[in-house]
Image (cartoon, rainbow, N blue to C red):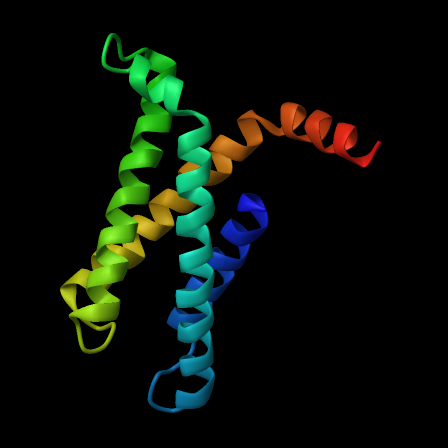
Length: 134
């Protein structure tokens, strides 16, 4: 589910930025509402994902391995995206703010790290999925 929601989040985020807010307000509004709903789902599934890997996070207190750094960057981006998304939703009027630009650029970076995270685990994910089908 997390991968599907992640892809929907990417698509809706891009949809917001390629649609002219003023010329096509209804379409832009639909993308924005979709992005908020999908973002909320991503937050819930992301928290569950982190909870499922909590032992790994606890082990970071002891050592930060070289191969752990991309995961930590992804986690920090997740937190930053969540905080800036909430600020945009609750405290900012319109997405053309500095915080909106930070959210957009961090989202692009997070997209790259997220896709890398998925691809690195693709064989394991496929194996788990094939076991679910049986």
